[in-house]
Every structure is written in structure tokens, then in C-alpha cells.
Figure 1 (cartoon, rainbow, N blue to C red):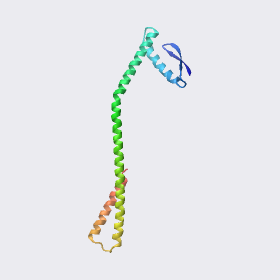
Figure 2 (tube, rainbow, N blue to C red):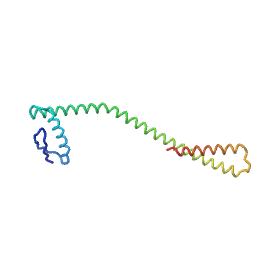
Figure 3 (tube, helix red, strand yellow):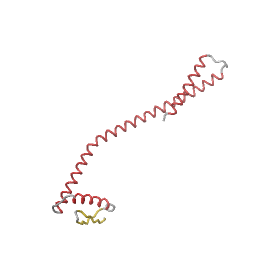
Figure 4 (cartoon, rainbow, N blue to C red):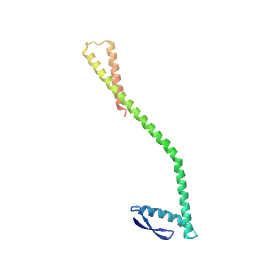
Length: 147
């Protein structure tokens, strides 16, 4: 248990507090002292009474502000959770698309090997297949650039 000397409204008070709480107690006493000194006239008790009332009023206003912002915080948390869920779904879809693209590239390579091992003259449909393969490779390169 720690002993602390506090000065409030020009009077010294000896107070006990838990170890490690001394600085917090000094800060609170400074706040009460500031309010008490702002009240002119009257006795010390009257100054402390009005200081306590003003601090209680400020605390009540702060609680009201917190209560008003809690529903907004809840809706923001829900929006963040929804966005994170959608992001995870988009990542899964992207991974699936990349896997499909990789499988298509493997099939394309196999088709190219088949075409290149075939007769030296290529019929028109083989050229069309090669053009399609080139387009798939170009699309694959674009997909790889997506973060």
C-alpha cells in the first residue's frame, strides 16, 4: 500500500492507494483541484462540492456519448466482418481460377506437343488452336498479376 500526499483546493490530503497507482491518483487530484480552483468564493467544502458536481456532469455526458456511438461501432464491426468474409471468398475464387488456369496451360502444352510432333503442314484448325492457346497464355499472365 502506498501513501500519497495530494493538494486539492490549497489543502493537503494524505491518501493510501495500491502500489503503482500513485501517478493515476495524482492526475485525478490535479483534475479535481483544477475544478475546485475555478469556483470562486464559498468555503473549501463548497468548492469541492461544486467541483465534484461538475466532474459528475462531465462523466454523465461522456457516458451518453459512448452509448450513442456504441450502435455505430457495432454496425462498423459488422461491415468489417462482412468485408473480410467477402475478401476471403474472393481469394478462394481467385485460387480456384489460378488452378483452372494452370490445368488449362498443362493441357495447352500437351496439345502443342501433339501438334508439333504431327505433320509439318498444319491444317487451318491447328492454327486456330494455337491462336486460342496464345490468348489463354496472355490471360494467364494477366491473372498472375492480380494481387
